[in-house]
Length: 266
Image (cartoon, rainbow, N blue to C red; front, side, top):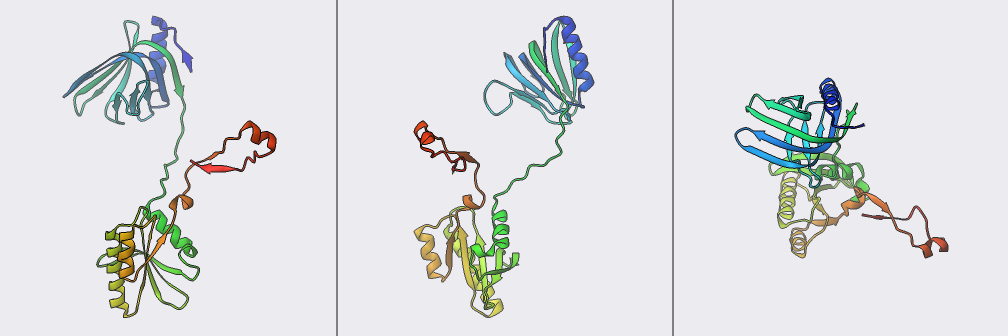
C-alpha cells in the first residue's frame, strides 16, 4: 500500500508498477477520477472520489462512495488493460476488440494504491435450498418420525420427482414432499397425485406427508380431505442464521447475568 504524491515521476513509477503486476496481482486504486466510455452507447462520469479494483483476470470494477452496483466495469477477458501517464495523470485504458468499445478512467489525483498478491481457490457454497432440506431429512429421518426409514430420494414418477420415499417399521410406504416456504394448495394436490400413483402401483395404502414451513387453513382442509398429513418444520433452526451475542447492560454485568454463551438469532 502506498500514498501517492501525484508528481509526474511518481505517476510514471506507478504506471510501471501497475503494468508489471497486471494479471499477476490484485490492484486497488483510490482517488479522484473521471470515466469515459465510448461504444454503441456513450457515457461520461464526472470527477469524484472512487475505488478502482482490477483483478488478476482483468476484471475491472469502478465503485463510487455509495451503492452496491459499480459505476463502470469490465468482464474478464473482454479487453486488455493498459496504464498510461498522460500529462501527469494516471490513465487506465481498456479496448474491447469484440465490441469495439473503449473505457478510460482518468485519475486527477491518486490518494492511495495497493498491489496485493491475492490467492483464493475456494468456491462459494450455498445451502438451504429445498434439495438441501430434503437431503437433511433423508439423513435425519427421526425428524419425520422415530419409526421412519427413508429408502429413496428424488423418486421418479409420471407426475414428477417425489422428494423422499420410505417405510415405517411395519413396512408401510410413506411418501414425503418437501417445501421450504409455506405450503400452497398446489403442493397438497401434487402430494395427492403421488399418493394415488403409489397406491395404484403398489396396491397398498400409502401415507403421504407434506413438509413445509407453515400451513394455511385452506391447505390443511385439502390435506385432511385427502387423508394426507402436514408436518411444519422451522427450517431456520436446521439452517440457522448468523448468531450475535446479546447486549449486556451495566446492571446485568454487575448482577452476574452476563453469560457469554447467551445468544439470539439475528
